[in-house]
Length: 232
Ligand SMILES: CC(C)(COP(=O)(O)OP(=O)(O)OC[C@H]1O[C@@H](n2cnc3c(N)ncnc32)[C@H](O)[C@@H]1OP(=O)(O)O)[C@@H](O)C(=O)NCCC(=O)NCCS
Image 1 (cartoon, rainbow, N blue to C red):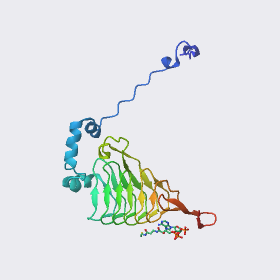
Image 2: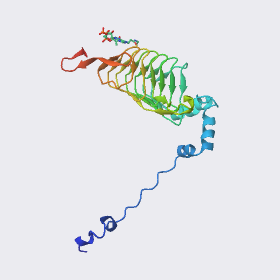
Image 3: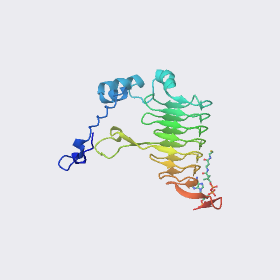
Image 4: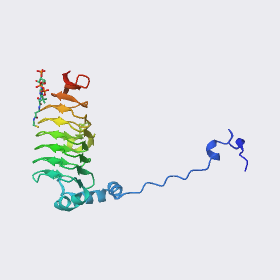
């Protein structure tokens, strides 16, 4: 058959002459979507996962469901004194030889918590997702990383009744975070950076940089030309 170049003219829009593409099939409705879409199912699911007025998973969730659902690398250690408020509907993963030391709190209720290999979460740390940590990271004691902010805009309501928002926190490989540091939502800490003890990190930290204070400011940076850490 001969190709007719006039078949696509100005009077007839191109889209009408072209073969119609079949529409994409609708995305399958997951169990999670169904539960979220129904207040009754949401209440039931919540009750099954945690007791009323509490924010920690029930014993059966911790003992059975989480173990099937969450990935743990070989040689990883989670000390039994930790408070693991992790739920099966979000991700919680720790890599090989990663250790979560005593008295930590880890919470993935509102966002995934993913920790790489050979990372050390020091004593009494608090990690509230969504948080992604790379490999070979050192956290000292009492470090707090929370990716959650409570909404506070409406002054006619208690803040506790206003909901919350999240911004993911990311810490790259090789970082060291000193004791009592706090990292607020949305922060990215670059490779091999150092966060000094007691710092409050409110801005992203570039790689190979030492930040100190509240709010944390860059104090030193590695210069790859001179191969020295230099004061800023
Ligand atoms: C940041 C740190 C690593 C020191 O780095 P350093 O490159 O040797 O820095 P220096 O000691 O030379 O100090 C440089 C400047 O930063 C300041 N500084 C150092 N640590 C600081 C901190 N935690 N908070 C605020 N300022 C700090 C110093 O006062 C100094 O200020 P100046 O230049 O005005 O005098 C160290 O102070 C620190 O905080 N270590 C964490 C310790 C810890 O938590 N250990 C737990 C075991 S894992």
